[in-house]
Amino acid sequence: MTEQQTRAKSHASIPTEHASKYLQQLCKHFAHKRPVTFDEHRGQISLMSGDCYLLAEDAALAVRVEAEDTENLPQLEDVVVRHLVRFAFREELQVEWTKA
Image 1 (cartoon, rainbow, N blue to C red):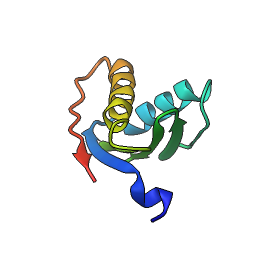
Image 2 (spheres, rainbow, N blue to C red):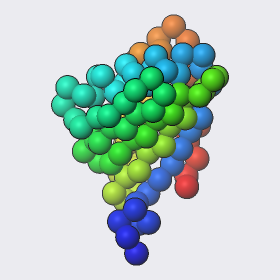
Image 3 (tube, rainbow, N blue to C red):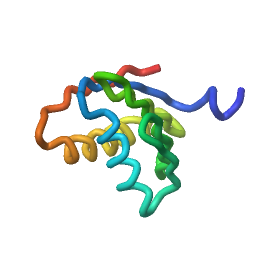
C-alpha cells in the first residue's frame, strides 16, 4: 500500500457565491507559515497534520482534506472550517464533511 492509499480523507462541498475569494484568503493566510500553492480556482495547503485541497466552483467551494491517520482527520477538518468561517463572516457557511 502506498502512503496515499493509507491516508484518512474527507471532503465537503460548501455552498457559496464567493468560493474563489475564500480559497484565496485561506491560502494566503496559511502561506505565511506553511507550503501553499494556489490560483483563482485551485489551492493546496500542506498543514502539520495533513493536506487541504480546494476547488472554487460556480456556486460552491469544494474542499478535500487528507490526514496521516484517522485520529488527525477531525482536527484537520476543524482547522480548515474555523478559518473559512472567520473569512466568511458575512454569510453562514454550511459544511458537512463526508469521509472517503
